[in-house]
Length: 286
View 1 (cartoon, one colour):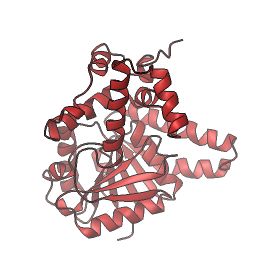
View 2 (cartoon, rainbow, N blue to C red; view 1 turned 120 degrees about the vertical axis):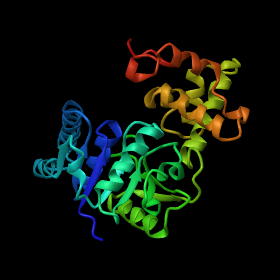
View 3 (cartoon, rainbow, N blue to C red; view 1 turned 90 degrees about the horizontal axis):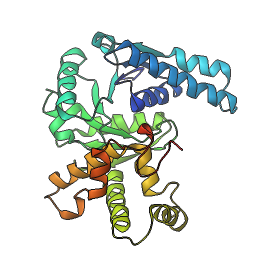
């Protein structure tokens, strides 16, 4: 089956970025969310990013117009009825995703792959909502998806080889580098390593071994990472980090090493979630 049109479900940060990646690679895209204001905001963000690319000389004005023209915003589910591949990027809630997948299972052609951008949920559990469990796969992009090269292609228990092959090929057409995650395990590969590092950084800080600033500096200058763990948590959102840590703790035999440290729990309770709220580990209001 030739893939010409991709349906992106969810027009938030990741959904709009994935839609851009697909359109930049020459695919037609239908990006759908539940409200006009959400998809309108997504299109504004896409146009803003493309305008910056024009200013930097990465693309021409004509290429920018072509990319934006290939993206069709929608609020009706029927808009994705005839797409050739689905990428879901809605809220990280298994019940919400399962309801959406069940609807897509009835709406789209049975040969269409149903991919999820989940960063931590079980593809095997998600697939129980549909009849075509062999067509359910993880396609985990990283933020910002336009710039980050890696995509994790994740097998559920019943995902077939053909689905994995189609998904890996599509990632390459997006000019990204795929890796295959062979076993459906919490956090897959990157988040499993990253969250362990973040928890250890918080414990170093809580024990008074070093300041947040020096831990970030040590990570950047000693390990050559582009961002320190506290900077990264503020960038991605402390609530998301806490949610994933807590998920690991409950899904990996309640090992204490995954138990979210007290300081991140308290920051989340206080609504101090990082850059998106103006304050987290660091104060961005200044």
